[in-house]
Image (cartoon, rainbow, N blue to C red; front, side, top):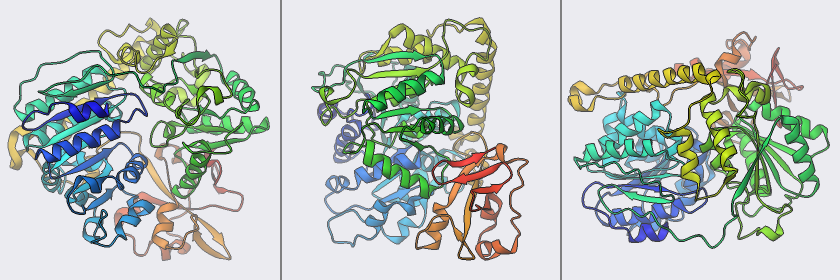
Length: 590
Protein backbone atom coordinates (compact mmCIF):
# COMPACT_ATOMS: atom_id res chain seq x y z
CA UNK A 1 0.00 0.00 0.00
CA UNK A 2 2.85 2.39 0.79
CA UNK A 3 4.50 1.64 -2.58
CA UNK A 4 1.17 2.24 -4.30
CA UNK A 5 0.79 5.57 -2.47
CA UNK A 6 4.24 6.52 -3.72
CA UNK A 7 3.62 5.57 -7.35
CA UNK A 8 -0.09 6.13 -8.09
CA UNK A 9 -0.87 8.95 -10.51
CA UNK A 10 -2.58 11.95 -8.91
CA UNK A 11 -4.95 13.97 -11.10
CA UNK A 12 -4.94 17.74 -11.34
CA UNK A 13 -7.23 19.74 -9.08
CA UNK A 14 -8.98 18.60 -5.89
CA UNK A 15 -8.18 14.95 -5.20
CA UNK A 16 -9.85 12.31 -3.05
CA UNK A 17 -7.89 9.16 -2.19
CA UNK A 18 -9.43 6.27 -0.24
CA UNK A 19 -7.07 3.75 1.38
CA UNK A 20 -8.73 0.46 2.34
CA UNK A 21 -6.61 -2.16 4.07
CA UNK A 22 -6.70 -4.39 7.11
CA UNK A 23 -5.83 -3.27 10.62
CA UNK A 24 -2.11 -2.93 11.20
CA UNK A 25 -1.19 -2.96 7.49
CA UNK A 26 0.47 0.49 7.46
CA UNK A 27 -2.36 2.71 6.22
CA UNK A 28 -1.14 5.71 8.22
CA UNK A 29 2.32 5.59 6.62
CA UNK A 30 0.73 5.25 3.17
CA UNK A 31 -1.45 8.30 3.91
CA UNK A 32 1.61 10.31 4.96
CA UNK A 33 3.29 9.46 1.64
CA UNK A 34 0.19 10.62 -0.26
CA UNK A 35 0.01 13.72 1.90
CA UNK A 36 3.60 14.66 1.09
CA UNK A 37 2.93 14.22 -2.63
CA UNK A 38 -0.25 16.31 -2.44
CA UNK A 39 1.55 19.11 -0.59
CA UNK A 40 4.36 19.12 -3.16
CA UNK A 41 1.74 19.25 -5.94
CA UNK A 42 0.20 22.38 -4.40
CA UNK A 43 -3.01 20.68 -3.24
CA UNK A 44 -2.66 22.15 0.25
CA UNK A 45 -0.44 24.14 2.57
CA UNK A 46 -0.88 21.80 5.52
CA UNK A 47 -3.10 19.03 6.84
CA UNK A 48 -5.75 18.20 9.41
CA UNK A 49 -5.85 14.63 10.74
CA UNK A 50 -9.43 13.85 11.83
CA UNK A 51 -9.90 10.90 14.20
CA UNK A 52 -13.09 9.35 15.65
CA UNK A 53 -12.15 9.69 19.35
CA UNK A 54 -9.87 11.61 21.67
CA UNK A 55 -7.90 8.45 22.37
CA UNK A 56 -7.24 7.80 18.67
CA UNK A 57 -6.33 11.46 18.20
CA UNK A 58 -3.78 11.22 21.02
CA UNK A 59 -2.33 8.07 19.45
CA UNK A 60 -2.06 9.74 16.03
CA UNK A 61 -0.41 12.81 17.56
CA UNK A 62 2.14 10.56 19.24
CA UNK A 63 2.98 8.94 15.90
CA UNK A 64 2.90 12.07 13.77
CA UNK A 65 4.94 14.49 15.86
CA UNK A 66 8.18 12.78 14.88
CA UNK A 67 7.29 12.66 11.18
CA UNK A 68 5.60 15.91 10.16
CA UNK A 69 8.83 17.95 10.29
CA UNK A 70 9.85 16.11 7.12
CA UNK A 71 6.85 17.51 5.25
CA UNK A 72 8.07 21.10 5.45
CA UNK A 73 11.20 23.07 4.62
CA UNK A 74 11.04 24.85 8.00
CA UNK A 75 9.63 23.85 11.37
CA UNK A 76 5.83 23.55 11.14
CA UNK A 77 3.21 24.48 13.70
CA UNK A 78 1.55 21.38 15.15
CA UNK A 79 -1.41 21.27 17.51
CA UNK A 80 -3.85 18.81 19.09
CA UNK A 81 -7.55 19.62 19.08
CA UNK A 82 -10.00 17.99 21.47
CA UNK A 83 -11.46 18.61 24.89
CA UNK A 84 -8.64 16.89 26.77
CA UNK A 85 -5.67 18.00 24.65
CA UNK A 86 -4.04 19.75 27.59
CA UNK A 87 -3.63 16.41 29.34
CA UNK A 88 -1.50 14.91 26.57
CA UNK A 89 2.16 14.67 27.58
CA UNK A 90 3.16 14.58 23.90
CA UNK A 91 1.29 17.82 23.25
CA UNK A 92 2.91 19.46 26.26
CA UNK A 93 6.31 18.47 24.87
CA UNK A 94 5.52 20.21 21.58
CA UNK A 95 4.21 23.29 23.38
CA UNK A 96 7.44 23.48 25.37
CA UNK A 97 9.59 23.24 22.23
CA UNK A 98 11.38 26.50 21.53
CA UNK A 99 11.24 27.99 18.02
CA UNK A 100 14.41 27.39 16.09
CA UNK A 101 14.91 23.86 17.44
CA UNK A 102 14.11 22.29 14.05
CA UNK A 103 11.09 20.47 15.52
CA UNK A 104 7.32 21.09 15.38
CA UNK A 105 6.14 23.95 17.59
CA UNK A 106 2.83 25.20 18.99
CA UNK A 107 2.44 28.73 20.28
CA UNK A 108 0.03 29.81 23.01
CA UNK A 109 -2.38 31.44 20.53
CA UNK A 110 -2.90 28.21 18.54
CA UNK A 111 -3.24 26.12 21.69
CA UNK A 112 -5.83 28.42 23.26
CA UNK A 113 -8.76 27.16 21.16
CA UNK A 114 -9.66 23.87 19.50
CA UNK A 115 -10.95 25.56 16.35
CA UNK A 116 -7.56 27.24 15.86
CA UNK A 117 -6.07 23.81 15.21
CA UNK A 118 -7.48 24.19 11.71
CA UNK A 119 -5.17 27.19 11.28
CA UNK A 120 -1.96 25.37 12.24
CA UNK A 121 0.27 23.86 9.57
CA UNK A 122 -0.64 20.43 10.95
CA UNK A 123 -3.70 19.92 13.13
CA UNK A 124 -4.60 16.62 14.75
CA UNK A 125 -7.87 16.14 16.57
CA UNK A 126 -11.30 14.62 16.56
CA UNK A 127 -13.46 14.60 13.45
CA UNK A 128 -15.91 16.83 15.32
CA UNK A 129 -13.69 19.90 14.85
CA UNK A 130 -13.98 19.47 11.08
CA UNK A 131 -17.67 18.50 11.04
CA UNK A 132 -18.57 21.73 12.82
CA UNK A 133 -17.64 23.44 9.55
CA UNK A 134 -20.86 22.11 7.95
CA UNK A 135 -23.15 22.88 10.90
CA UNK A 136 -24.80 26.32 11.29
CA UNK A 137 -22.67 27.22 14.28
CA UNK A 138 -20.45 30.11 15.30
CA UNK A 139 -17.02 30.11 13.67
CA UNK A 140 -18.07 27.63 10.97
CA UNK A 141 -16.69 30.08 8.40
CA UNK A 142 -13.35 30.19 10.22
CA UNK A 143 -13.26 26.39 10.25
CA UNK A 144 -14.06 26.27 6.53
CA UNK A 145 -11.34 28.77 5.72
CA UNK A 146 -8.79 26.88 7.80
CA UNK A 147 -9.69 23.56 6.18
CA UNK A 148 -9.64 25.03 2.67
CA UNK A 149 -5.85 25.37 2.93
CA UNK A 150 -5.44 21.81 4.16
CA UNK A 151 -5.41 18.25 2.97
CA UNK A 152 -8.09 16.60 5.12
CA UNK A 153 -7.17 13.11 6.39
CA UNK A 154 -10.04 11.14 7.95
CA UNK A 155 -8.86 8.03 9.77
CA UNK A 156 -11.18 5.13 10.68
CA UNK A 157 -13.72 6.51 8.18
CA UNK A 158 -15.91 3.42 8.68
CA UNK A 159 -16.60 4.69 12.22
CA UNK A 160 -18.68 7.48 10.64
CA UNK A 161 -21.08 5.11 8.90
CA UNK A 162 -24.17 5.78 11.03
CA UNK A 163 -26.65 7.92 9.05
CA UNK A 164 -26.24 11.24 10.89
CA UNK A 165 -22.43 11.37 10.79
CA UNK A 166 -22.26 9.86 7.30
CA UNK A 167 -24.33 12.77 5.97
CA UNK A 168 -22.14 15.27 7.81
CA UNK A 169 -19.00 13.71 6.35
CA UNK A 170 -20.44 13.70 2.83
CA UNK A 171 -21.34 17.39 3.11
CA UNK A 172 -17.90 18.18 4.54
CA UNK A 173 -16.17 16.47 1.63
CA UNK A 174 -18.40 18.29 -0.85
CA UNK A 175 -17.72 21.69 0.71
CA UNK A 176 -14.00 20.96 1.03
CA UNK A 177 -13.80 20.06 -2.67
CA UNK A 178 -15.74 23.20 -3.62
CA UNK A 179 -13.00 25.25 -1.98
CA UNK A 180 -10.26 23.39 -3.85
CA UNK A 181 -9.31 21.08 -0.99
CA UNK A 182 -8.10 17.48 -1.24
CA UNK A 183 -8.78 14.61 1.14
CA UNK A 184 -7.54 11.15 2.12
CA UNK A 185 -9.82 8.60 3.80
CA UNK A 186 -8.38 5.63 5.70
CA UNK A 187 -10.51 2.62 6.54
CA UNK A 188 -10.45 -1.09 7.18
CA UNK A 189 -14.13 -1.90 6.75
CA UNK A 190 -15.89 0.69 4.57
CA UNK A 191 -19.02 -0.68 2.82
CA UNK A 192 -19.09 -0.07 -0.94
CA UNK A 193 -22.33 1.90 -0.68
CA UNK A 194 -20.73 4.40 1.73
CA UNK A 195 -17.55 4.58 -0.37
CA UNK A 196 -19.64 5.50 -3.40
CA UNK A 197 -21.69 8.08 -1.50
CA UNK A 198 -18.62 9.87 -0.11
CA UNK A 199 -16.89 9.79 -3.49
CA UNK A 200 -19.95 11.19 -5.23
CA UNK A 201 -20.23 14.03 -2.70
CA UNK A 202 -16.59 15.01 -3.27
CA UNK A 203 -16.98 14.81 -7.05
CA UNK A 204 -20.04 17.06 -6.87
CA UNK A 205 -18.12 19.66 -4.89
CA UNK A 206 -15.16 19.51 -7.28
CA UNK A 207 -17.45 19.68 -10.36
CA UNK A 208 -15.94 16.41 -11.55
CA UNK A 209 -17.76 13.61 -13.40
CA UNK A 210 -18.58 10.63 -11.21
CA UNK A 211 -18.86 6.99 -12.21
CA UNK A 212 -19.61 4.56 -9.42
CA UNK A 213 -16.93 1.91 -8.90
CA UNK A 214 -18.10 -1.25 -7.14
CA UNK A 215 -14.90 -3.23 -7.65
CA UNK A 216 -14.82 -5.77 -4.81
CA UNK A 217 -11.02 -5.88 -4.66
CA UNK A 218 -9.45 -5.56 -1.22
CA UNK A 219 -7.03 -4.01 -0.27
CA UNK A 220 -7.73 -1.00 -2.45
CA UNK A 221 -6.32 2.44 -3.16
CA UNK A 222 -8.97 4.49 -4.97
CA UNK A 223 -8.16 7.90 -6.45
CA UNK A 224 -11.27 9.71 -7.64
CA UNK A 225 -10.92 10.76 -11.26
CA UNK A 226 -7.54 9.07 -11.56
CA UNK A 227 -5.84 5.70 -11.41
CA UNK A 228 -6.71 3.16 -8.73
CA UNK A 229 -4.63 0.28 -7.42
CA UNK A 230 -6.43 -2.97 -6.70
CA UNK A 231 -3.71 -5.62 -6.90
CA UNK A 232 -1.13 -5.96 -4.14
CA UNK A 233 1.59 -8.44 -3.31
CA UNK A 234 0.94 -10.76 -0.38
CA UNK A 235 2.67 -9.59 2.83
CA UNK A 236 5.72 -11.59 3.85
CA UNK A 237 4.56 -11.96 7.44
CA UNK A 238 0.99 -13.03 8.08
CA UNK A 239 -0.89 -14.81 10.83
CA UNK A 240 -2.95 -16.67 8.23
CA UNK A 241 -6.70 -17.21 8.45
CA UNK A 242 -8.43 -16.65 11.78
CA UNK A 243 -10.81 -19.51 12.52
CA UNK A 244 -14.18 -18.46 13.94
CA UNK A 245 -15.96 -20.57 16.52
CA UNK A 246 -19.24 -19.92 18.33
CA UNK A 247 -19.61 -20.12 22.10
CA UNK A 248 -23.21 -20.63 23.11
CA UNK A 249 -22.97 -18.92 26.50
CA UNK A 250 -20.74 -16.76 28.68
CA UNK A 251 -19.85 -19.73 30.89
CA UNK A 252 -18.15 -21.36 27.90
CA UNK A 253 -16.09 -18.19 27.41
CA UNK A 254 -14.98 -18.28 31.05
CA UNK A 255 -13.93 -21.93 30.71
CA UNK A 256 -12.03 -21.27 27.47
CA UNK A 257 -10.13 -18.31 28.93
CA UNK A 258 -9.32 -20.21 32.12
CA UNK A 259 -7.94 -23.10 30.08
CA UNK A 260 -5.69 -20.97 27.84
CA UNK A 261 -4.55 -18.60 30.57
CA UNK A 262 -3.51 -21.63 32.57
CA UNK A 263 -1.37 -22.70 29.62
CA UNK A 264 0.39 -19.32 29.53
CA UNK A 265 -1.58 -17.54 26.77
CA UNK A 266 -2.22 -13.79 26.77
CA UNK A 267 -6.02 -13.63 26.54
CA UNK A 268 -8.65 -10.97 25.92
CA UNK A 269 -12.44 -10.89 26.13
CA UNK A 270 -14.08 -7.94 24.35
CA UNK A 271 -17.56 -7.29 25.68
CA UNK A 272 -20.24 -5.00 24.27
CA UNK A 273 -21.35 -3.43 27.57
CA UNK A 274 -19.44 -2.12 30.57
CA UNK A 275 -21.64 -3.92 33.11
CA UNK A 276 -21.01 -7.23 31.32
CA UNK A 277 -17.26 -6.55 31.30
CA UNK A 278 -17.29 -5.90 35.05
CA UNK A 279 -19.24 -9.12 35.62
CA UNK A 280 -16.78 -11.10 33.48
CA UNK A 281 -13.63 -9.82 35.20
CA UNK A 282 -15.21 -10.50 38.58
CA UNK A 283 -16.06 -14.07 37.56
CA UNK A 284 -12.51 -14.67 36.27
CA UNK A 285 -10.94 -13.33 39.45
CA UNK A 286 -13.22 -15.54 41.52
CA UNK A 287 -11.58 -18.45 39.68
CA UNK A 288 -8.15 -17.20 40.67
CA UNK A 289 -7.27 -15.90 37.20
CA UNK A 290 -5.16 -12.73 36.91
CA UNK A 291 -7.56 -10.51 34.97
CA UNK A 292 -7.52 -6.77 34.27
CA UNK A 293 -10.34 -4.49 33.15
CA UNK A 294 -10.51 -1.55 30.72
CA UNK A 295 -13.57 0.38 29.56
CA UNK A 296 -14.78 3.96 29.13
CA UNK A 297 -16.45 4.40 32.54
CA UNK A 298 -13.33 5.38 34.46
CA UNK A 299 -12.03 8.79 35.37
CA UNK A 300 -9.47 9.84 32.81
CA UNK A 301 -6.82 9.54 35.53
CA UNK A 302 -7.55 5.85 36.12
CA UNK A 303 -8.09 5.08 32.43
CA UNK A 304 -4.69 6.49 31.48
CA UNK A 305 -3.09 4.55 34.32
CA UNK A 306 -4.71 1.28 33.25
CA UNK A 307 -3.98 1.85 29.54
CA UNK A 308 -0.29 2.38 30.34
CA UNK A 309 -0.24 -0.86 32.33
CA UNK A 310 -1.96 -2.78 29.54
CA UNK A 311 0.42 -1.40 26.90
CA UNK A 312 3.33 -2.50 29.07
CA UNK A 313 1.90 -6.03 29.18
CA UNK A 314 0.05 -6.56 25.90
CA UNK A 315 1.58 -3.89 23.63
CA UNK A 316 4.07 -4.44 20.84
CA UNK A 317 6.97 -4.60 23.30
CA UNK A 318 4.92 -5.94 26.18
CA UNK A 319 6.39 -8.20 28.85
CA UNK A 320 5.00 -10.37 31.66
CA UNK A 321 2.01 -11.28 29.47
CA UNK A 322 1.95 -15.05 29.95
CA UNK A 323 -1.29 -16.19 31.55
CA UNK A 324 -2.66 -12.67 31.85
CA UNK A 325 -6.21 -11.75 30.82
CA UNK A 326 -7.70 -8.41 29.79
CA UNK A 327 -11.45 -7.87 29.74
CA UNK A 328 -12.50 -4.75 27.86
CA UNK A 329 -15.13 -3.07 25.74
CA UNK A 330 -15.09 -1.23 22.41
CA UNK A 331 -12.16 0.93 23.60
CA UNK A 332 -9.95 -2.01 22.58
CA UNK A 333 -11.00 -1.80 18.91
CA UNK A 334 -8.80 1.18 18.07
CA UNK A 335 -6.00 3.44 19.33
CA UNK A 336 -4.32 0.77 21.47
CA UNK A 337 -1.68 -1.34 19.71
CA UNK A 338 -2.30 -4.59 21.59
CA UNK A 339 -1.41 -8.20 20.74
CA UNK A 340 -3.12 -11.29 22.18
CA UNK A 341 -2.74 -15.03 21.72
CA UNK A 342 -6.38 -15.89 22.47
CA UNK A 343 -9.45 -13.74 21.82
CA UNK A 344 -13.08 -14.05 22.90
CA UNK A 345 -15.62 -11.45 21.79
CA UNK A 346 -19.30 -10.86 22.27
CA UNK A 347 -21.16 -10.92 18.97
CA UNK A 348 -20.92 -7.50 17.31
CA UNK A 349 -21.36 -6.15 13.77
CA UNK A 350 -18.81 -7.57 11.35
CA UNK A 351 -16.80 -4.34 11.08
CA UNK A 352 -16.26 -4.30 14.83
CA UNK A 353 -15.28 -7.97 14.91
CA UNK A 354 -12.74 -7.44 12.13
CA UNK A 355 -11.26 -4.54 14.11
CA UNK A 356 -11.15 -6.67 17.25
CA UNK A 357 -9.55 -9.58 15.41
CA UNK A 358 -6.81 -7.17 14.35
CA UNK A 359 -5.53 -7.42 17.95
CA UNK A 360 -5.18 -11.21 17.66
CA UNK A 361 -1.70 -12.49 16.71
CA UNK A 362 -0.90 -8.90 15.69
CA UNK A 363 2.91 -8.62 15.82
CA UNK A 364 4.10 -11.70 13.98
CA UNK A 365 7.59 -10.23 13.56
CA UNK A 366 8.10 -10.22 17.33
CA UNK A 367 5.93 -13.22 18.25
CA UNK A 368 5.96 -15.72 15.37
CA UNK A 369 3.57 -18.66 15.35
CA UNK A 370 6.10 -21.07 16.82
CA UNK A 371 6.47 -18.92 19.94
CA UNK A 372 2.73 -18.70 20.66
CA UNK A 373 1.20 -21.00 23.31
CA UNK A 374 -1.68 -21.87 20.95
CA UNK A 375 -1.28 -23.49 17.53
CA UNK A 376 -3.41 -21.05 15.49
CA UNK A 377 -5.38 -17.78 15.85
CA UNK A 378 -9.03 -18.39 16.72
CA UNK A 379 -11.76 -15.80 17.30
CA UNK A 380 -14.31 -17.27 19.71
CA UNK A 381 -17.63 -15.40 19.57
CA UNK A 382 -20.24 -15.54 22.31
CA UNK A 383 -23.41 -15.75 20.24
CA UNK A 384 -26.74 -17.52 19.95
CA UNK A 385 -27.26 -19.84 16.98
CA UNK A 386 -28.26 -17.79 13.89
CA UNK A 387 -30.18 -20.82 12.66
CA UNK A 388 -32.51 -20.78 15.66
CA UNK A 389 -34.41 -17.50 15.99
CA UNK A 390 -37.66 -17.81 17.92
CA UNK A 391 -38.36 -14.14 18.64
CA UNK A 392 -36.78 -10.67 18.55
CA UNK A 393 -35.04 -11.34 21.87
CA UNK A 394 -32.75 -13.78 20.10
CA UNK A 395 -29.64 -12.13 21.60
CA UNK A 396 -30.83 -11.47 25.11
CA UNK A 397 -30.48 -14.93 26.58
CA UNK A 398 -26.76 -14.90 25.78
CA UNK A 399 -25.43 -11.34 25.89
CA UNK A 400 -27.24 -9.66 28.80
CA UNK A 401 -26.74 -5.86 28.62
CA UNK A 402 -24.61 -6.24 25.49
CA UNK A 403 -27.66 -7.38 23.52
CA UNK A 404 -28.97 -3.80 23.43
CA UNK A 405 -25.89 -2.12 21.96
CA UNK A 406 -26.16 -2.88 18.22
CA UNK A 407 -29.10 -3.39 15.81
CA UNK A 408 -30.19 -7.01 16.01
CA UNK A 409 -30.47 -7.38 12.20
CA UNK A 410 -26.79 -6.49 11.77
CA UNK A 411 -25.95 -8.90 14.57
CA UNK A 412 -27.84 -11.78 12.98
CA UNK A 413 -26.35 -11.18 9.52
CA UNK A 414 -22.89 -11.07 11.06
CA UNK A 415 -23.43 -14.34 12.92
CA UNK A 416 -24.75 -16.01 9.78
CA UNK A 417 -21.98 -14.67 7.53
CA UNK A 418 -19.24 -15.81 9.90
CA UNK A 419 -20.87 -19.20 10.36
CA UNK A 420 -20.97 -19.63 6.59
CA UNK A 421 -17.38 -18.46 6.10
CA UNK A 422 -15.93 -20.26 9.11
CA UNK A 423 -12.94 -17.90 9.15
CA UNK A 424 -11.72 -14.35 8.74
CA UNK A 425 -9.11 -14.52 6.00
CA UNK A 426 -7.52 -11.11 5.84
CA UNK A 427 -7.41 -9.52 3.44
CA UNK A 428 -9.01 -12.02 1.05
CA UNK A 429 -12.55 -12.32 2.40
CA UNK A 430 -12.94 -9.06 4.33
CA UNK A 431 -14.87 -7.33 1.55
CA UNK A 432 -17.24 -10.30 1.18
CA UNK A 433 -17.93 -10.33 4.92
CA UNK A 434 -18.61 -6.59 5.04
CA UNK A 435 -20.96 -6.69 2.05
CA UNK A 436 -22.77 -9.76 3.43
CA UNK A 437 -23.90 -7.56 6.34
CA UNK A 438 -24.08 -4.06 4.83
CA UNK A 439 -24.38 -4.61 1.07
CA UNK A 440 -27.52 -4.33 -1.07
CA UNK A 441 -27.70 -8.10 -1.51
CA UNK A 442 -27.51 -8.94 2.20
CA UNK A 443 -29.80 -11.83 3.00
CA UNK A 444 -33.21 -11.29 4.59
CA UNK A 445 -33.50 -11.66 8.34
CA UNK A 446 -35.73 -14.37 9.83
CA UNK A 447 -39.39 -13.37 10.19
CA UNK A 448 -39.02 -13.01 13.96
CA UNK A 449 -36.53 -10.16 13.45
CA UNK A 450 -38.34 -8.29 10.67
CA UNK A 451 -40.14 -5.89 13.01
CA UNK A 452 -36.91 -5.06 14.83
CA UNK A 453 -35.21 -4.37 11.50
CA UNK A 454 -38.04 -2.08 10.38
CA UNK A 455 -37.78 -0.17 13.66
CA UNK A 456 -34.03 0.23 13.15
CA UNK A 457 -34.57 1.41 9.57
CA UNK A 458 -37.07 3.96 10.88
CA UNK A 459 -34.49 5.25 13.36
CA UNK A 460 -31.95 5.52 10.53
CA UNK A 461 -34.41 7.51 8.41
CA UNK A 462 -34.99 9.86 11.31
CA UNK A 463 -31.25 10.36 11.76
CA UNK A 464 -30.79 11.10 8.06
CA UNK A 465 -33.64 13.62 8.15
CA UNK A 466 -32.17 15.32 11.20
CA UNK A 467 -28.78 15.46 9.53
CA UNK A 468 -30.23 17.10 6.42
CA UNK A 469 -31.93 19.66 8.64
CA UNK A 470 -28.87 20.25 10.82
CA UNK A 471 -26.20 20.79 8.16
CA UNK A 472 -25.73 24.10 6.38
CA UNK A 473 -27.59 24.46 3.11
CA UNK A 474 -24.61 24.85 0.80
CA UNK A 475 -26.64 25.58 -2.34
CA UNK A 476 -28.41 28.53 -0.70
CA UNK A 477 -25.18 30.47 -0.21
CA UNK A 478 -23.49 31.81 2.89
CA UNK A 479 -26.11 34.33 4.05
CA UNK A 480 -29.16 32.11 3.65
CA UNK A 481 -27.60 28.70 4.10
CA UNK A 482 -25.64 29.23 7.31
CA UNK A 483 -26.21 30.60 10.80
CA UNK A 484 -24.37 31.26 14.05
CA UNK A 485 -25.95 28.99 16.65
CA UNK A 486 -24.15 27.59 19.66
CA UNK A 487 -22.38 24.26 19.19
CA UNK A 488 -24.60 22.47 21.73
CA UNK A 489 -27.69 23.22 19.63
CA UNK A 490 -26.24 21.37 16.64
CA UNK A 491 -24.27 18.34 17.86
CA UNK A 492 -21.80 16.57 15.61
CA UNK A 493 -23.00 13.21 16.97
CA UNK A 494 -26.27 11.73 18.13
CA UNK A 495 -26.49 9.27 20.97
CA UNK A 496 -27.63 8.73 24.50
CA UNK A 497 -27.39 11.82 26.66
CA UNK A 498 -24.47 11.66 29.06
CA UNK A 499 -23.57 13.63 32.15
CA UNK A 500 -20.13 14.44 33.47
CA UNK A 501 -19.43 13.52 37.10
CA UNK A 502 -16.51 15.26 38.82
CA UNK A 503 -15.25 12.90 41.51
CA UNK A 504 -13.76 14.15 44.78
CA UNK A 505 -12.66 12.55 48.05
CA UNK A 506 -11.74 13.59 51.56
CA UNK A 507 -8.05 13.44 52.41
CA UNK A 508 -6.68 14.81 55.67
CA UNK A 509 -9.98 16.49 56.46
CA UNK A 510 -10.05 18.41 53.16
CA UNK A 511 -11.85 17.88 49.88
CA UNK A 512 -9.53 16.88 47.01
CA UNK A 513 -10.02 15.93 43.39
CA UNK A 514 -9.93 12.19 42.73
CA UNK A 515 -6.81 12.51 40.58
CA UNK A 516 -3.73 13.00 42.72
CA UNK A 517 -1.70 15.35 40.50
CA UNK A 518 0.03 18.65 41.12
CA UNK A 519 -1.94 21.19 39.08
CA UNK A 520 -5.61 21.86 40.06
CA UNK A 521 -6.92 22.42 36.50
CA UNK A 522 -5.34 19.18 35.35
CA UNK A 523 -6.54 17.35 38.46
CA UNK A 524 -10.13 18.43 37.80
CA UNK A 525 -10.08 17.27 34.18
CA UNK A 526 -8.52 13.94 35.14
CA UNK A 527 -11.17 13.40 37.84
CA UNK A 528 -14.14 13.47 35.45
CA UNK A 529 -16.11 10.44 34.32
CA UNK A 530 -19.05 10.30 31.90
CA UNK A 531 -22.21 8.42 32.76
CA UNK A 532 -25.54 7.76 31.10
CA UNK A 533 -27.94 10.55 32.10
CA UNK A 534 -30.80 8.05 31.99
CA UNK A 535 -29.16 5.81 34.59
CA UNK A 536 -28.55 8.75 36.91
CA UNK A 537 -32.24 9.64 37.01
CA UNK A 538 -33.71 8.90 40.44
CA UNK A 539 -30.36 8.67 42.22
CA UNK A 540 -29.86 10.90 45.27
CA UNK A 541 -26.79 12.70 43.93
CA UNK A 542 -25.06 15.29 46.16
CA UNK A 543 -26.56 18.77 46.52
CA UNK A 544 -24.52 20.96 44.16
CA UNK A 545 -25.16 24.04 46.34
CA UNK A 546 -23.48 22.45 49.36
CA UNK A 547 -20.97 24.83 51.01
CA UNK A 548 -18.08 22.38 50.54
CA UNK A 549 -18.43 22.72 46.75
CA UNK A 550 -18.51 26.53 46.70
CA UNK A 551 -14.74 27.03 46.55
CA UNK A 552 -14.53 24.75 43.52
CA UNK A 553 -17.42 26.23 41.53
CA UNK A 554 -17.02 29.93 42.25
CA UNK A 555 -15.00 30.54 39.05
CA UNK A 556 -17.01 28.17 36.87
CA UNK A 557 -18.95 29.54 33.89
CA UNK A 558 -22.67 28.83 33.82
CA UNK A 559 -22.35 26.15 31.12
CA UNK A 560 -19.99 24.12 33.31
CA UNK A 561 -22.26 24.40 36.34
CA UNK A 562 -25.12 23.13 34.19
CA UNK A 563 -23.26 20.13 32.77
CA UNK A 564 -20.98 18.88 35.58
CA UNK A 565 -22.14 17.18 38.77
CA UNK A 566 -19.71 16.98 41.70
CA UNK A 567 -19.71 13.71 43.62
CA UNK A 568 -17.80 12.82 46.78
CA UNK A 569 -16.56 9.24 46.85
CA UNK A 570 -16.55 7.76 50.35
CA UNK A 571 -13.80 5.56 51.77
CA UNK A 572 -15.91 2.55 50.81
CA UNK A 573 -16.39 3.84 47.25
CA UNK A 574 -19.99 4.84 47.81
CA UNK A 575 -21.29 8.04 46.19
CA UNK A 576 -24.97 7.56 46.99
CA UNK A 577 -27.45 4.73 47.15
CA UNK A 578 -27.12 2.86 43.84
CA UNK A 579 -23.87 4.52 42.71
CA UNK A 580 -20.22 3.90 43.61
CA UNK A 581 -16.75 4.26 42.17
CA UNK A 582 -13.81 1.90 42.33
CA UNK A 583 -10.36 2.73 40.89
CA UNK A 584 -10.07 -0.83 39.57
CA UNK A 585 -13.63 -1.46 38.34
CA UNK A 586 -14.78 2.06 37.44
CA UNK A 587 -18.22 3.62 37.95
CA UNK A 588 -20.64 1.08 39.40
CA UNK A 589 -24.44 1.20 39.22
CA UNK A 590 -26.77 -0.78 41.42
